[in-house]
Every structure is written in structure tokens, then in C-alpha cells.
Length: 297
Image 1 (cartoon, helix red, strand yellow):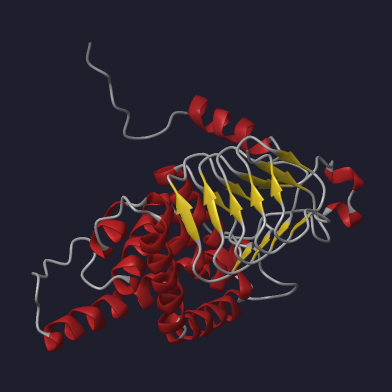
Image 2: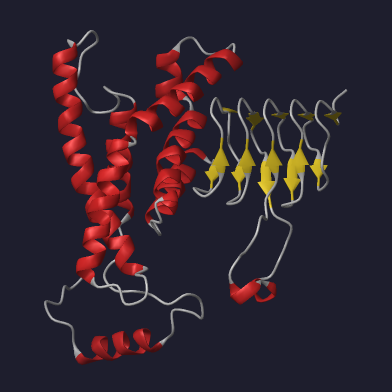
């Protein structure tokens, strides 16, 4: 059966549109102005970012052994694309959450400044991700090489996207960083809030079902396995100060900790001490001293 296409909306559709718009978007934080970034645009941004963090990654068309001059020119062209795309998306995000009295022109200036500063930080972001790659290679005997880790490991993908998104969160960018980590969440099953603080040499094995909350603090050389939750104890928004989350709600994981599959660690006051080992399926809402093994035979 053919579907008839109408070139102009009839009055009945216009009335329906009015009825839809009369329904409030909710009682949460008010909306600014302009469109939200689209998931497709966020995906293109992430692809550009990964092509910078891992030169030659993705649809670069670069062959093995590409001369350094050609690789440099390719990377420079990706950086041009990245800066332009980032400015546009940051502008859209800032317009949706403008500061008091902030104009559209001011949002544009802020977007340009943040994008420029972010590009200058890319060597530092790459250095952090390289430490994560090395941690994966050291920790996983199944890894046949660095190239396999970069191209195949969902944990590394989620961490790399988080590293970039976290830098944007620290710069005060709304919406866009969360959309980036949610893209990684959808592709990998690993949910890392961009507000979390994670030290270098972070290793995620397998990864599916991992949740890392906004105020989680993770030290250096931490290893976690699939299904791990670093979460908050249940709290209703009406119980929070001014209706907004305040304080630390998620646990602290100190250096050199190992957390095995499906362990759940909850609460902002919970600290897992340096070198501790948390066994699979453990449920923890209390602090664990350094070096202690919990639920491990």
C-alpha cells in the first residue's frame, strides 16, 4: 500500500503540534536556545578525536610504514576538521546551558576558546591514553600486540573517549562530554561518566556492563573487569541541596587496586585502599584497608 506524502501540514497537524508543545519538558533545569547536537555529529567528532589520538586509526587510507611527513600532513588535516567540528558542537552545547545573561555571541567566543585550548591539550591526552594501552598490554596475556588493543579492545575505546570528554568537562562544557561517553557506552557497554577522575595506566578487561559514576576517583594502575559498578547509594533529588547533586557520591579506588567481575562498590565515603583486591560478585559499602583481599579464595 502506497503512503501518500503531504507537501504542507494541514490544520489538524498544526493543532497537534501545538498540543505537543504545550506539554512541559519537565521540572528540571530549564532549556536554553538552539538545537541539541545530534548523535551523528558526536560520532563524527569522536572519530576525528580517535584519529588524532591514534594516528592512522579509522578511515585514514594510510598504509603501513607511511613516511612521517605524510603522516604529519594527514594529522594536521584531521586537526583542522576536529577544531571546526568541536567549535560547532561546543557552541550548541553552551547555547543550551548559557550562564546568566550570556549572549549567543559570547557562547561562540567561549566555544572557540575552549576548542583552541583543548587542541593544545591533545598531546597530554594522547600520553594518558598511551599509558592505558601499555597497561592493557601488560595486564592481558591474550593481547598479541599494541595494534590489536587499539583496534579491538572496547575498554580502551571507552577510556580514550572518556579522557577527551573529561578534559571538556573540566573546561565547563555542558552536554557534549556526556553525549561522547554515552556514544562509547552504546558501542561498548561501558558507562564512564565524564566527570569521574581516573589516573593513568587504567586497564578494563572485557568491559561489558561496567558503570563508573560521576564523582568516582580512581588512582593509577587500577584494573577492573566486566560488570563492575562504582556507584552511589540511592538518594532522591528532593533530598539534595537546591535540588542538585552535591558532594562526593561515588567511591574512591586507590592505586594498584584490582576489582574482579561483577563486584559492586557504593558510596562517596567508601575507599578501597592501595593494592587491595576485590573478588568477583562482592557487594561493598564500606572502606577496605590497603592490601586487603575481599572475597578472594
